[in-house]
Image 1 (cartoon, rainbow, N blue to C red):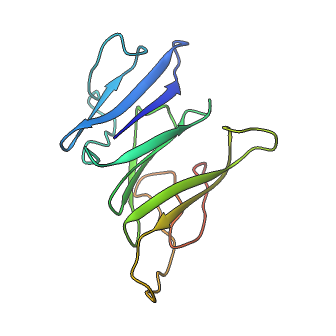
Image 2 (tube, rainbow, N blue to C red):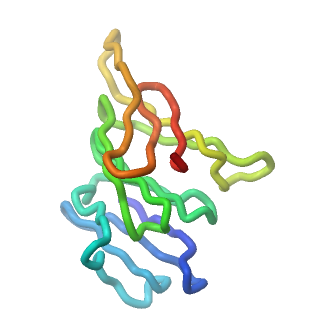
Amino acid sequence: LSAILSPNEQGSRSLVVNLWDWNVGASWDDGATWAGWAKGEASPGSCGEGGGGQGMGRSRKAIMFHRNHFYNSSDGGRNWARGNLPAPMGAFVYVRQPGSRTEPAGACFALFSAPAGQVLRGRSRSSAGGAAGGGGGASSPDR
């Protein structure tokens, strides 16, 4: 389970939380009210309980994982693109800007759970904009 915080256009924070079985909740006003996604916005609804994620500094970039799927957002969690990893994800890390402990520099990496001796090939990319690391490689959430 995770709570992903991102700055929003109104000057407060958006919260995206995977808080119960196979669904994700959101607050666009710092937790004062809770809602889902509006028609036309891309929800990470299939991430659900058991997934995890994090926001990346003040950049409005965020990522969520569930098994071998990832969901990335570059607009503070309003819209998410889903991608597939070649194996279940175990950990996530991203390269930070020089001198920063939180602001992303572009490259993201996912560590996988795979049987010893198994070769994972290729890079994973999301199906609609953005990307996350895969197959031991790295790619940028800006691309």
